Image 1 (cartoon, one colour):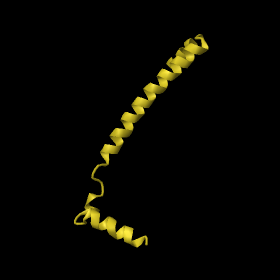
Image 2 (image 1 turned 180 degrees about the vertical axis):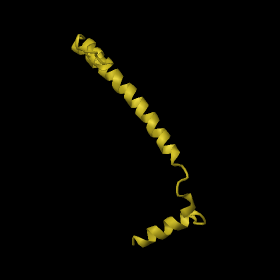
Image 3 (image 1 turned 60 degrees about the vertical axis):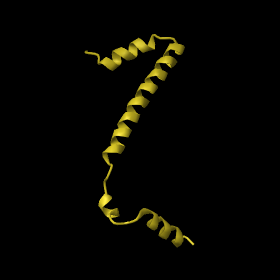
Image 4 (image 1 turned 90 degrees about the vertical axis):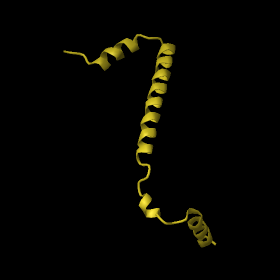
Length: 72
């Protein structure tokens, strides 16, 4: 039976002390978090300008003032 890379890595990790496992987990979480933030940032910037034609010719402050007036 051929072992996958993850299985091999997991067997090696299981040999570590609990403290070393915690350090490894912490480093993995930091790595995942960094990659996740990068992916999210890119996704956010990809939607820049979507729907801008809806607001064409509308003064932002005037719109906000009308909305606030409707709350009263």
